[in-house]
Length: 191
Image (cartoon, rainbow, N blue to C red; front, side):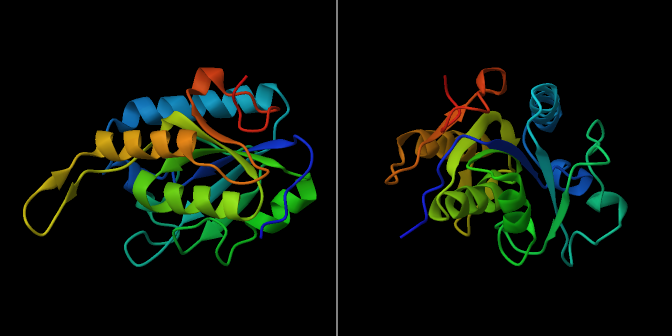
């Protein structure tokens, strides 16, 4: 059973909004703009922003594709967390940073919806955090299945937004909320 985290200390976690990732995703200019808007809102409200950056054989550490998408720049005092697995919690320093900040509520934005965002969202809930998925600030690419059928990116995004609205965990609140409506101080992030 998860340890439920008392309080309402929100943090924004931005996952994998990197040049190489975003070049392959649906509606990336709008999503990058919404991520930047969410970051600006968090900073204006004094909410900590944590940046998670993926590296693997296809996204080489330090390469141009590994860099942040144009228009996104972490501030000097905002933690950078490097990861090699889908979940931002697996073998990273994310939990240490969250503990230091006294975080109880994670606001989540980034890419890719069906891989790193989904894995990080479930991992946060499994660890007892309240969670708000920024509904219009995450994206992915479409998937072509072995039989030639396609799963459209917009449908994958919609599915996770609905899931995060309907999902129920004891003692935790979760939701999916548009970037303009995120409440960083309310568990689940909706007013």
